[in-house]
Length: 232
Image 1 (cartoon, helix red, strand yellow):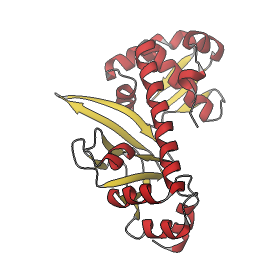
Image 2 (cartoon, helix red, strand yellow):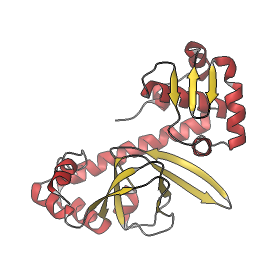
Image 3 (tube, helix red, strand yellow):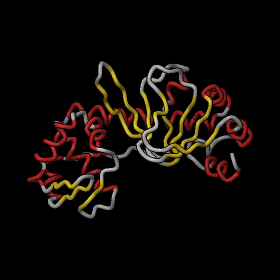
Image 4 (cartoon, rainbow, N blue to C red):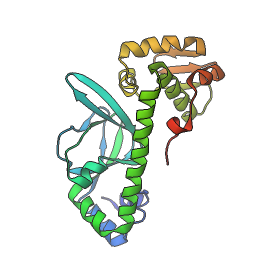
């Protein structure tokens, strides 16, 4: 990779604590690549050949069986995915595709395992990354099991609203079919859920959403940091 890319990658939390020589060795076979939207990167069941780090953009993690598909989570910068499969040299349990133009760092899994054993700083960062991923998964499970589909949608809108400036409006960053899958709904149920939230000030115009009664929506949604906070 060009030096400017190496410098940017070196500053990422996953690599900042590494020994300089070990980092240079790890990057020898790695490459930074841009992908257009809707490119499938990996398929569940395939061997974990690479560790992926999302540097820019967004990656949808999803699974399919018997004609049914569910979005598990959306991975955004700066996060690694498929860490567990990489460390265990095990098949991918999820598939992944880009949802927008993205830039990803790909590192051969064998090299990751070598450095995990050799470099304490890198190993510590990997463990921290896995701890964050575990807590994110617990939040996802709680959201799915403890809330109705309409409550999940209401809380998703409140989070997106806060992330986009909290000015009474937001734009969906993903298409509605993917949003429905992320929330554990069908597209038809998502449309009905939006209609149900209309009395709470939610109006929809394509991907643009207006929230005109935030207090009412928050009272209905009952957001909690134990489910909705972005874990650090």
